Structure formats: C-alpha cells, structure tokens
Image (cartoon, rainbow, N blue to C red):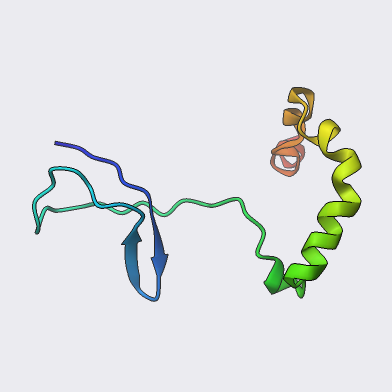
Length: 83
C-alpha cells in the first residue's frame, strides 16, 4: 500500500496535517522534502503589517500576474541560465 499525506518538518520532526487512513503504527515511510515556493517575509525583515501594506499596494497588478500568459516567467532565471 502507498499513501500520501501532507505535513511539515518542524523542530526535527514531521508533523502530519491529518492522520493517514488505515495505516498501522510502525509502518515504514519515505519522507520527501518539497520546496514550498513561499517567501519567508520575516527573514527579509517584513512584518505582518508591512506585508498587508505591500499586498494592498500591489493588488492592481494581480490580474496581470495571475494570467496564464505570465506562467512563462515562473522559472525565468533557470531558463535564462540555460541560454
């Protein structure tokens, strides 16, 4: 049996977002770490209030950024480095 369950790595342990269905204790697992793609704003010195202000000021661009045509730029740096 193979089952996938979402979770996070926190303080040396994997915390599951929900318990897996029908998986007995002591079942072997393989953990694969994924890149979340999120930007940790606190690491860049941006607090919650500043983040809200930035989001509000950039809202006018959201339709353009979210358009399917902009997907071409999702991996721009990696594509550019191959040229």
